[in-house]
Image (cartoon, one colour):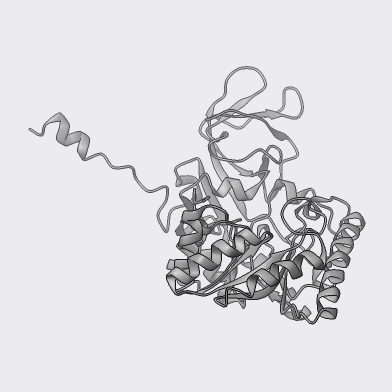
Amino acid sequence: MPSATARLADLVLPPPARPGDLLAAIATPALVLDLDAFERNLDVMQAAADAAGVALRPHAKAHKTPAIALAQLQRGAVGICCQKVSEALPFLQAGVRDIHISNQVASVPMVELLAQMGRHGHISVCVDHAAQVVALGRATAAQGSTLAVCVEIDIGQGRCGVDGADAVLQLLDTLVAHPQLVFRGLQAYHGGAQHVRAPQQRADVAARAAERTAAVVAALAAAGVACGTVTGSGSGSVEFDLASGVYTELQPGSYVFMDADYGRNQVDGALRFHHSLFVASTVMSVGSGERVVLDAGLKSLAVDSGMPLVWQAGAPSTTLDYAAANDEHGIVRPRVAGGARPALGSQLLLVPGHCDPTLNLHDHLIALRHGVVEAVWPVAARGLSR
């Protein structure tokens, strides 16, 4: 008779899903992807970039999943963006060879890792201070590697970036002492522009950002410096940035999924994206009164941009609200007193408020087509924030 220890050792956590499983059979909470909507989003964005003659470099911080990056590259993307050095490593190992770190790097171990990565792909990184240039120069010299450098300019975000062409030229003077660092161009990103709700107001913010960028490009040209690349934009402003004539490369990320926050943006143009990302959850308690309790709370979805939407019959629910999130519980209430509540054990789909940090909470992304699991993709860059 086997010992208690042997029996315990035999216990293995089953996978959240297997190809061929039905949606209803998935162990929840789980991150799920509607492949039809997802692939439509990829195709729409790539076609728009191709029509405008602008390179598409999607941002992988939104999905952290090499399988998605490879699907984007197959459709014509020139490479990807990552926000952190460690985040880029799984993509490089998966065969993505053109990666832009759309951020500054100050940690010495990460500067050294970045220099090592420069030996295995075409890697670029942002700078906005001479000390960053010097650190990158020393690390690449030690590794015998090459990195491309984008100088980030502040175009209204009020976060990273230098102000104006004079500051860019000063950084380029520092760059001269490090021939293994190659000037790639400018990083010009305005995150706040992505979430302005009204289309005309969003267009105005994007236009002002593009004007500031164009002014720097023109001033550099007058000084004899050509910007081969002007990279920026996001899912909320991309339709305006495509038409600006300023950007040579665009960095949208969330368009592959959309989320509840992006869903609040009003869209007038033809560039529309659809919700493809959901958190599958199960009603674990019917409680008492006017609520049910789901098994998906703060450890399954991000609420920094608002609560998730309950998704029913292919659209946001008109009868149920996700009202509160605790660590492992989600409270759902009918909008009308006495309204119908989901049954104990039933499954609900939720559109997360913010897709990027929600991905960072999950090990797997379960890809479904017509309610059947087609693949289970590892979220390989989860937790890699160094």
